[in-house]
Picture 1 (cartoon, rainbow, N blue to C red):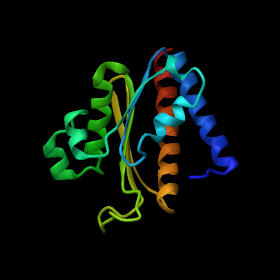
Picture 2: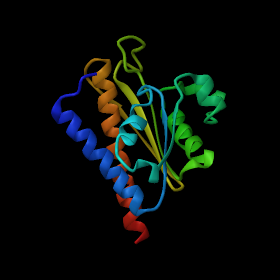
Picture 3: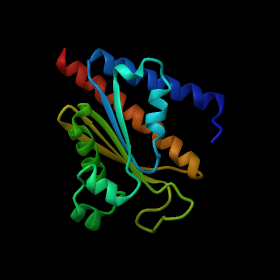
Length: 173
C-alpha cells in the first residue's frame, strides 16, 4: 500500500513513541499478528535502534499456528473464532509467554474484501495487549478497503500500546 505522507508521518511517530516508552521501562515487545501480516513488526523495525526493545514478531495467520505456536486453545478457536476477544487475548498472552518480552500486542480481524459475515463484517478487528501481567483488548470496526483496514489496525494497535505503557510507567514510578 502506498501510504500518504501524513500516514507515513503518523506511523513513524507512533512507532518511535512505542520505542521510547519500551526503552524507558527497559522491556521488550513481541507481536502476534494475523490480519496485519507482520506490518506491526515491520513498522517497529523500521525505527533505528529497535533491536534494543523489540525481540520478535509472529505472523499467526492460520488457526493452526495460533494454537501450536501461541497456545490459543482449540476450544477457543472453535467456540469464538479467530476474530474474537478470547483469541486475541490468548494470542497476546502466548506471545509474551514465549519469553522474548513482557509486552505484547496481538491482532486478528477481517480485512476483506471477502470473509465477512453478518456477525463479523469486513473491518471487524480485535486487538489485544499484554503489559507485564495485565491483558486487555478492544474491538474495532474499520471502514475502507483491505489496506485501509490493515493500516487502521496497525495505528490503533500501536496507539493502544502507547496508552497502556504510559499507564504502566505512571504506576511504577
